[in-house]
Amino acid sequence: PGGVPGGWPPGAGFPGGGFPGGAYPGGAGGFTVDVGDLGDLFGGIFGGGGGGRGARGPHRGRDLQYEVALTFDEALAGVSTKVDVQRAETCSTCKGSGAKPGTSATTCPACGGTGRTSQGQGMFAFSHACSRCGGSGKVIESPCTTCRGKGSVVKLKPVTVNVPAGAADGGKLRFKGKGEPGENGGPAGDLYVVTRIKPHPYFTRDGADVLMDLPLTFDEAALGTEVTISAPDGTRVKLKIAAGTQDGRVHRLKEKGAPRLKGSGRGDLRVRARVVTPEKLTAEQKELMRRFASSRGDDVRAHIK
Image (cartoon, rainbow, N blue to C red; front, top):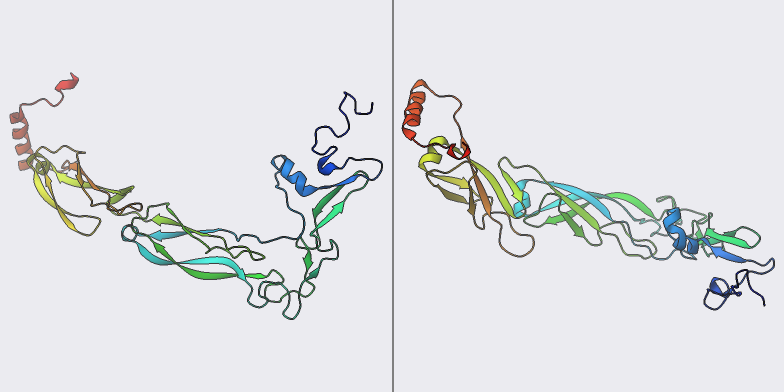
């Protein structure tokens, strides 16, 4: 009986028999293979995805990304600022058609409006995007003088961005539909704004918590004291330093940090004690320190002997 070497009968392995689509090559007729279909199959090898047949349909606009610089206080309080966005917008002269007013695009004579042409001979013919119309299926004989046939023009437009309270450095805000307009009736892309926070003289961020170092003199740490500090929310807070406070001890002030982006409330203010050792002492101060040392009586290194 007929078949191919190895006993594989004609048409085996494909639904409906034969090659994809039910066609089986025979004689000199051959068949046409759409490169778009091969692109779907071999895109991972050749680095390209498949394109559909025919003229290009609605296409989503391109997303845009910009950065905005904020002070530490602006990020905590929230701010409304403007970002100059450079994006392509629909040409007002031709209303996006790309054709000179009073004229219109015509069917591409090379592809007959399908947006694709076939090349090759013999058994295989490969389908490509039409080189004349770029796959749109239309050609513009009299292009618009404003956009030069593109249907869009690049403009610099200020966009108001409302940054929420508690924005963090590197945070990304999404503004739906504020990107470039779509093509052929497609939706506009999105605008992404990345927040960059300028350093503060003494505050740093750890999520919603705010960290700061509080310098203390030797006598303040040893005897204890009370200091008044400015919290990130603008209030003045009294902080009691216990006698014998060690360098690095952290005091936590609840709900005095940055606003939480998700949920309610604020983070904490974490204050780290930094004991400052005097670098210069008068003769009298040195004598007092010697007297203190001789009367101390404890051994702070006893555990490492």
